Every structure is written in C-alpha cells, then in structure tokens.
Length: 236
Image 1 (cartoon, rainbow, N blue to C red):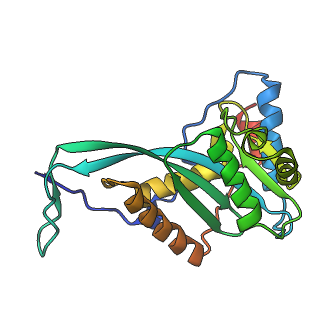
Image 2: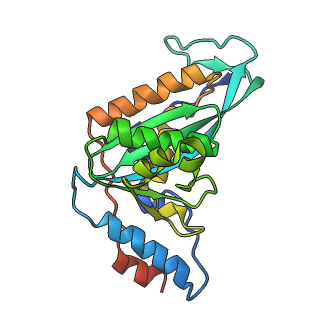
Image 3: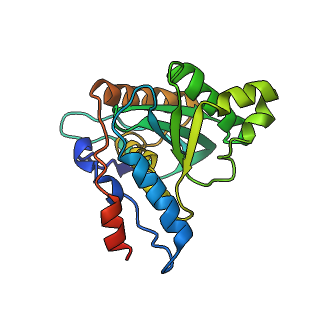
C-alpha cells in the first residue's frame, strides 16, 4: 500500500503566470513569433471592459484512473493509503475559459475534443457566458481544432456567421502557448484539484466545478507581469 503524500497549501502553488511553463524561445530574428507575441501582450494591456471582455481559452486531457483495491481512509495519526496498482478508465477532456481581469473561469468536462466540441464551446461562450458583450477578444493557441471555420461544420452558415461576428481571435505564436493565461489557470487546476486518482467523468466534473466555484467566489484574478518591454529585453 502507498501512503498518500500530504498536500501543500494550494495557494502557495500559484506561480507567477509567465514562470509556470518552460519557455520555448524562438529562433533569433523570428518576426512571425515576435509579431504574434506582441499582439497577445497588447491585448493583455487593455483595461477591463465588460462590454469587450478578454477571455483566454485552452484545453487539456485528464487520464481517468480507478482503484484496484478499496483505499484505506485517513484517520487520526494515519494518512490515507492507496494501492500502487490501478486501472485505466480512458481519458476526459477539460476545456478552460478564463477572464483574467474579472477573476472568472469556467471548466467544461467532455469525452472528446473534436472540432464540433470546440464549436460547442464557442457557442456557450457567446450565448451563455457573454450574451450581452458587444465583442469577445479570445486568446488561444494554434491547435488545429482552434479555428472559427469549425463553426461552419457544426452550425448552419447563418448561425456560424452570427457567432463569428461576436469574436475577435488573437492566436499565441507557434511554440508560444505559454503566453496564454488559460495555461496558467490549467496549471493551478492541476495542482489544486487533479493530483489524486479520479475514476470517471462525473467525479471529475464535480471536483472541477467545486474548484472553479471557489475561485470565482474569491475573484481570483491573474496578475500578468510579462510586458512587451520585458519581451524585447529577454528575447533580444
């Protein structure tokens, strides 16, 4: 049997946003990287505007793992114990939406992450979370499913165009997804919520909903400190 590690204080695991991921530095004089990077950093300088929110989007997979033997729960003077052996139960996908300046995030648990799943996230973003916004600035990486053309595969042309007109997309550079603040939030989610074995989507959904609800209630914003001037010095 394996004794579970004690969990560190969750708040202490929240790192500076641009230090959470290993930097992928572009080749010297890579104008395409610099242009896309400065586009993102310019967006992050915008003041808060409820009518034109800046929302970061990302996703990650989560391995579902079940127990082979019933764990021994924690008791006075004894930590919880789990067997080394486990059973794989497939994977689930986590779609992350985060509005850094507002201190709001939302996580959807899905079985897949296809183009149609992405299109569904965009429709929910617009019609459920920001129905009154004039325009949503969406920061996301260059994954092949992260294309607004996917909306035409999921919806009729009129509906796809209606949704697209509400979104301004700003892509992070290739190999520069560390510039996406949604990655910062996914890192916090991983440390605070996903460290233990989770065997099914329903349990995963309950845990991430409780986690995001707590952070939203406390309006946990992201203090982004990497600016254009810093980038021009560090990346030369």
